[in-house]
Length: 285
Image (cartoon, rainbow, N blue to C red; front, side, top):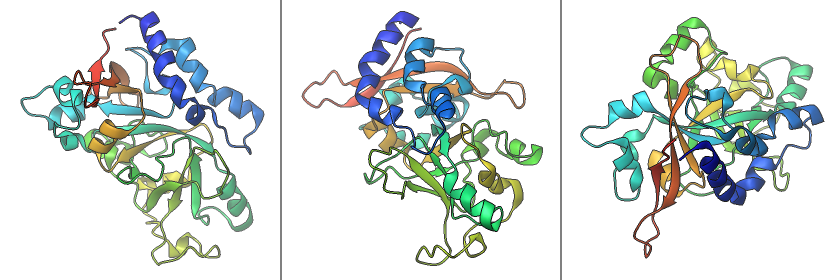
């Protein structure tokens, strides 16, 4: 499938999800919205293709780190595994699947930081992905596939399976500000004790104070990208609404560089129309 056909496919498949892609946070400045929230239009104008870098991809999108995934599977190929995620054990891909997101709002954290100092806000930031209230769509903030916020030591630890290591103490939930139509999720420091007392600070939270392993999250800015790691790869591959799956690879790339897109799968229906099982087929680019 050439670039033009991928463009047409994107128009047919992403249009039903346009509300999730186009809803900006009302507190963002206009220049931020026009620059980073035009990703829905970008997907059509730039025609994402093999050879693009992670930074070129629209968000939110679903990623599969190929080196990790290939290391987990035995005799089967990725195409066979992804073709029918309902009947093939895709749990072996846990830790190699990522949701690529963009930070869209840090205003709640910034207000607390200006009043009390850095590291005092329970809320860290909002990202442009909301998993909804559906059971099984749990995910957590990982060290990430191209984390430029961490020092050399932790960047090295983030290679390989380290990319899906959790940032200790950081949790993900639906946005809590009650803005209608706000299709965002929220990263926050989990409290050690029950309840969410607004007067508590991260001194009473699970902030591990272990340096770059998780403290970097407090310094995220609008337009930064981070990756969430699904607790269940099967749930996201079988039931999520992502129309495309991007296969990216870090192995063989220069140290510190973004992963490159090597393969793209499209979600489709199974040939068994009576069951209409969504699976993934590779696009021939």
